[in-house]
Structure formats: structure tokens, C-alpha cells
Picture 1 (cartoon, rainbow, N blue to C red):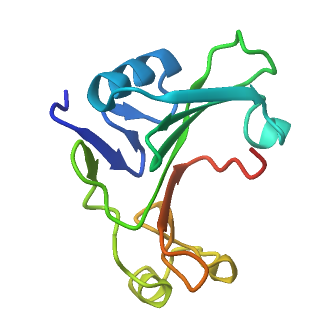
Picture 2: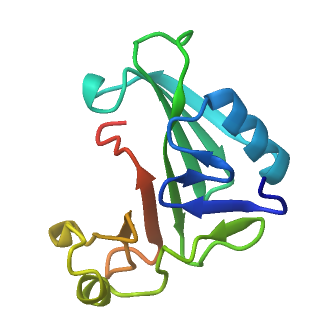
Length: 153
């Protein structure tokens, strides 16, 4: 078991892969990262992102999403995605996996990850199996997103 931090990696977060239970993941993250804020409700996209969503915010930089199959707050939810937004790379207790590049421009991402299936029109590219939106003229922060997309929530 990982100790001494929370790894952000393409297949999950901390010691958990996507699909892990909400309770287990939140307990681990709270023990490592401390307080959080949570909000949830019915998914706006239904089947596209799961029917009931819970979002946990650990500070202003890390958002972790859990999704259930049904539109009820009482149904079990599972780890669906994480998102990190900051001008700076994660620092302990958050740890960025070596699989995920940091500090590259959109052009550099596209060159280094030619099979990245990107959304260059949106200023993003997939690299290391994580969607990355590097800083641009409109935004100074980098956005990292791993896991299922929640286009509407």
C-alpha cells in the first residue's frame, strides 16, 4: 500500500483504480489530504456520465468524482475521475505519476504524443492517458483530467 502521499495516475488516484468504492477512496483521501467539501446530485447527462454524481474538492486544485448507475443518492458510487487544476505541478502530499507530462505546450504535447487523440480545437491533448489542457492566452493554469469525462456536470 502506498504511504506518504496521494499519487495522481492515469488509472486512478492514491491506492485506488477507477471503479473503487466511494467510501474507501474518500476515507483514504481524507486521511492523506485532510478536509474536503462535497456536493452531488443527479447527473445531467444520464447514461453518459452515470446517473448520480458526487464531487469531492480537496482544496482548490483537486476534484474527485464518483458516479452511480442509478439516479438516487442511496445507490453505491464508484471512482469515475479526478481533475487537477493549477499553475503549478502537484506537490506533496499530491504526487504526479511519471507517466503524466507537466509543463509542455499544446504543440509539444502533440509532437511527443502523436497518437494522443486530442482536442486541439479546445486547447487540450491526451498524453500518458490523461487529458491535458496546458496554459493558454485565456488561462494560466494547467488542467489534468483522468478517468471518465462528465461533459455536463
